[in-house]
Length: 96
Image (cartoon, rainbow, N blue to C red):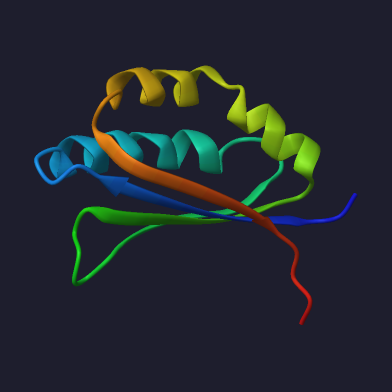
């Protein structure tokens, strides 16, 4: 199995920043306890508080996909429906 790095950008609507932040924070402890999670760090842009970034490292893509199908992610999607302006996700590998 090869490690997988995930970089996810979440941009909240300007009037939904606090909601999105609260819901993202709910994901942290439960995800860090998941099998295969090596790192799961949430960041917020200093200049644009609507821009959040998750930097994640997983033991394998398969274990990350299990995470993506867990109930807490489904709950997040329901709670933030209509509150996120933009979402991008990159699956990456470390080269150095």
